[in-house]
Image 1 (cartoon, rainbow over the protein chains, first blue to last red):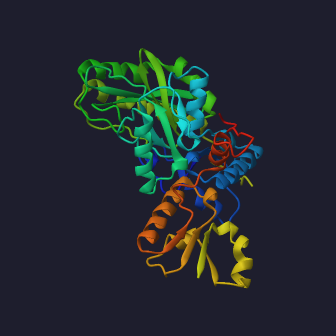
Image 2: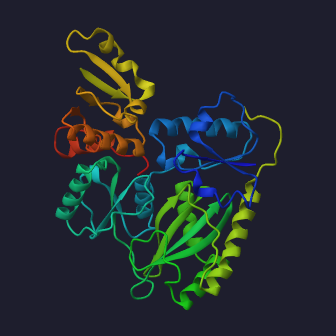
Image 3: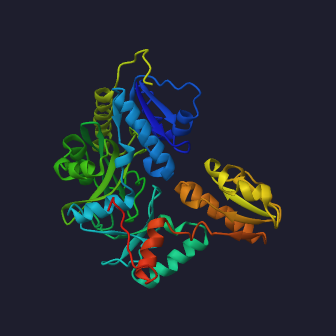
Length: 297
Length: 107
């Protein structure tokens, strides 16, 4: 049994997983802490969505992680060691993994490189869709968003670091870590540098062939693994891109939406779906805890 | 009347003045209750405990603040403009108010 702990607003991310791996159970942090019955099943516990928790709740959750680990259970993603988006990007820059830096808006420090994009902590809906080219731009957009009710304490400035994979088309790559298993997910292609879900069929046959190769061989493992380790993430999806041939890490989502594809106009893309699915299910099996009646606490 | 909006775990901080205010009437409301408001009486609302909210709830509080303000109600502490402890200490240092600086350990 594997229990994924999520925030109440984001329980849907594993909807495609549970039919394929019935041993997965999704439990919200509210359900967990609201239980009158204090015993928990002996299972593997994955602490996800940590970047969406209030700070006090993160402390509570870190205590639970330690209780479960102390009871001999398998636990993934230590809440006490999780980094904010800012913390991760700053460390990736300072350790030379990334060529771009990030800044907290409330810090009042302007970036060393322009342009920048504006992001929010704990938000996975993508950046503000306008590149900012000057302190005046930053001041204007921050004031507009703040006046509209977006907390300035959540805002980050991130130096722009992307390039099209072919003229007019951007590509985002992703890699999962589940326990000790690292494997690639399908690339996402869009015409804009703001890449979220991708546009089906927009890439060339050569790019879909490359996508198949990436999913099959996971060629960026050695470059990306240190970022997972630096972030202390044992379950999550890391998004990155190649810029000047170098992998640049954008974020790690601790509760990514997991999909196993479907129909696709590219045969290469369609052929990659079952590879990803097998990798995902095999990785779950490797962290699974056999069901037993014993209680953890 | 003055209504303090606080987190459910920290209502004790204003209970004394709710019970014994020598001046205007004071009441408290949790953010859980505040987010369910469909209409608000014309009181003064103080948004407290903002540093204890999750990012999502901070944004909800900022929207509530704006709704109340737009309705002509007096509101204190704009959730969208209140810095974190780090942000406040860093700015106070940079602007010369404080002689000491602060850093985020995760950095």
